[in-house]
Length: 497
Ligand code: ADP
Ligand code: MG
Image (cartoon, rainbow, N blue to C red; front, top):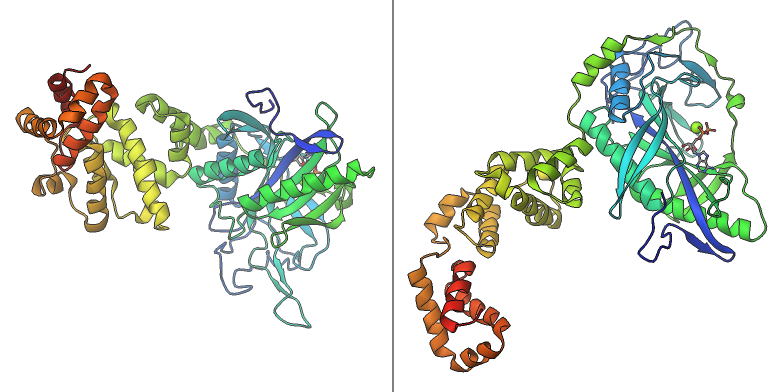
């Protein structure tokens, strides 16, 4: 479904000299499996060890060594498949993908080709208020390679095999995305799902989530164009830049009368450009064949069902539950569930509320606007928030009970942020309670009316001016008068409706 603006124009289209173009994007994401040991050996997967500190004889491909499948990696792939609402294949096959590279001592990568562990699924993304589904073609398990290091010495290159044999899930999307924003939303959502499932850390800085970005362009309604694959893009921002640069490059070539060569390209973050790396290899170049050292991977449906029972609530389900239970907008609920830590925090706030049905929405506003806003400003993470969920709940309870106004609540938040303490006690001790005592409010109203005879005349002709009176009375009360009570008493005394 194409994104349409109010005037019916497809906003995803990119204009060129010969008219509008559509961008087509499909992503292959490599997600490092969250597990202590590698896919076929017991070596540690820990990040940041000394070079070659986590290398067994299997990882170094010593002759005669045999791979043994790590059951936990298989379970993680199944959990991920379930999280992507995908088909789980009870029988899959490991193949050898043959190529030569110094950081690949086996001379082949063990991967899955014709029979992956996970089949078709989907991911829901929200872009500019529209919801769209992106198809997942497959998820397969494979080994990571080692790392070649070229910049340590002018004459030598080094190889670090710590990553060699670490389990990766390759998650392949259908070519369903139509803009840089959609591709970014897809990777962001995929990362959120993986983190909820705890099947991958999704830490792009550490390289444990990276995307190969396939881009082609076409005139709307035409067949798909020839694609280029941009390898190993390692940040959400770079994915956006790579898509936009690559689409423009292809459009310019075609409009100049050229054709696109199917090739593998690299994204250079410094220049924001992509450049050619090699012409695209075909599957037959890899001489795939079933690995004779490994039996087909088989398990029972009962095993899948057992794993399904242990899955946490996923972001989309949580989002819909928040919307229904507390009347939140899709946008606000989406913000709260984007990070599991934030969603957990919000749920803790809810637990502290006296009337969650009534005040849940206020609580969401406080978490999103006041708390996240402040954390962002201070560059702090929710896990290190100086204000606890119980304290936010305390503030919201005071608002809900009519004890403090929204304005006083902001002052209270400031005190809690800097000094800590129980919100209800602070309000009590510092006399911050909202004045609902009509006698006291009446007195303040009378004083303001007496001091401003000209305004009293004016408000009779122009009732909206009552706002000015409300402001004066609120000021006189130090912000503590109940604004609603002030409004009522003013209306009564001034004789306006
Ligand atoms: P290969 O196995 O040769 O890499 P696939 O058919 O598996 O090719 O596709 C790899 C990725 O490229 C998938 O994510 C797919 O969605 C995407 N893709 C396929 N055709 C196109 C196209 N014309 N434009 C953009 N992306 C595409
Ligand atoms: Mg591929």
